[in-house]
Amino acid sequence: MANIREKRNIDGKLIAFLIRVYRGCGTDDKQLKPYNEMFKIR
Image (cartoon, rainbow, N blue to C red; front, side, top):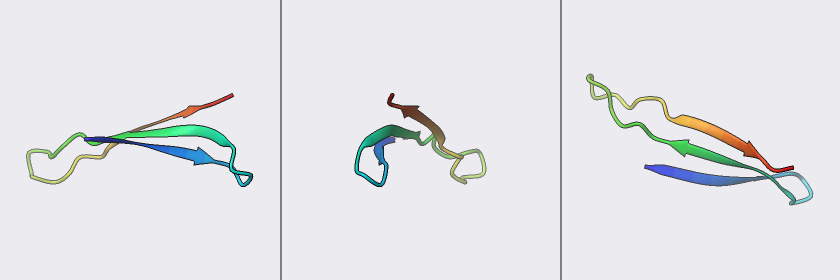
């Protein structure tokens, strides 16, 4: 599962997108750390 969030500055201008991808569970049934990537808009 994944989600995308918009990042805005104080003025409300769109500055970046944060994408988070969940990688599921490990062998011990604990959730693995999600993969995060931020794409900045110029």
